[in-house]
Length: 335
Image 1 (cartoon, rainbow, N blue to C red):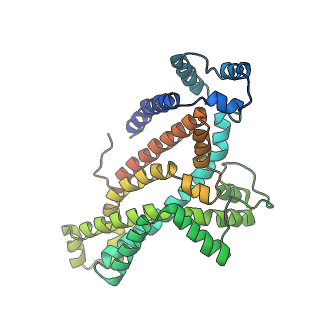
Image 2: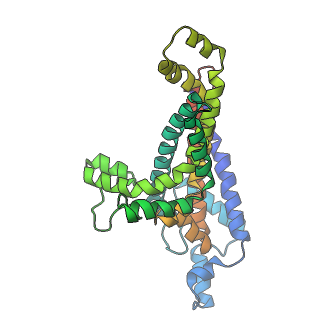
Image 3: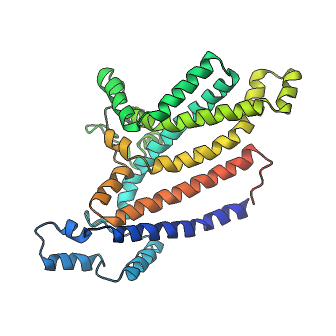
């Protein structure tokens, strides 16, 4: 097991190296001059040349890339042309916000998706099954930005149950920063009012992001459960008089989860890279908005930092999923 984990972590190096090369090349091939955009329309040629020299952009491209790689090994992710600040410091601010949103969305999708999939499979071809399938189809078909606007209109403006946008009230006192995730930091500080405020702001964007993976997990879980329910050992257990609830949650659930885990791992990476629309609608200060602003100004160092951080988390999360395969199904040997 340990050798497998170390080997997978070692594979992270060529993956991130390839990502950095690809993003670096795309940033250089795009038309336009990021230095001129950062210097401003009234900058002189001398000011543009000085800014270019300050960031090392007057050097040959292979040398620029080599300096970037050596900087990564020393914890230097480069500097933003627009803010002049270190990219790593910006990521420490924006990345926890996106992680909090994605984790909350995935928790909702996993818990609700597994339960609804089990229920639909057990009540196959009944009204519950048809209702779950209809809701899944509607959820996966609805654009997230439109769903976000509907949630804001109903639950924030009409009912007043949730916040319209942002992560925390402007007049409130956020908890001391430990992880950067306001809900977790509130719990660590023992500040229940701050936790409830942070949860109120997190609820709507997390629900908006969760419906698409929830629908997919539900459909996958339903199909897997129906397949497992037809297995001989399940039919034998029924004949032996094992209670249906114990049979479902102890035997059927574990085997039906195997194929669903793959979808969960893929959706985690997909949500990390697809938060822009939801973050825009709910004014959520995450890496989606950070990357979009950087792309519009051709500030490629922050873009590379976002890509590398997402790539790292995606590979690590899928490593966790692979380890869970061995826990759920002992016949799966990790080598």
